[in-house]
Length: 80
Image 1 (cartoon, one colour):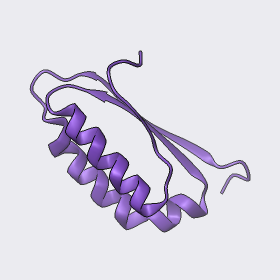
Image 2 (spheres, rainbow, N blue to C red):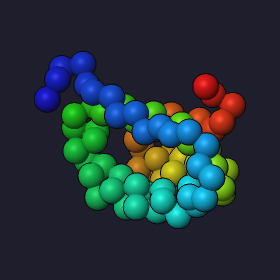
Image 3 (cartoon, helix red, strand yellow):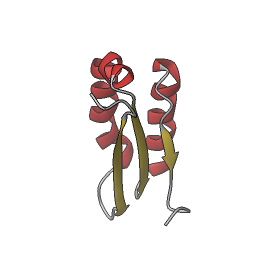
């Protein structure tokens, strides 16, 4: 545990063939499973992703974050 918390950055370029919403399904399951540990260790999570179906993927992960009270920062291809 670090007194100031930690950061987890999940980023990637613009995927050509990867369905971003499908890959975020696993991430959402992990957030649900580890939400108490994420809060306990004050882990800030920032996500930047683009590619096929990225809008739906970012929407889903943001909704999961809001439901779990994690406060994820979510960005699409507009952020470089």
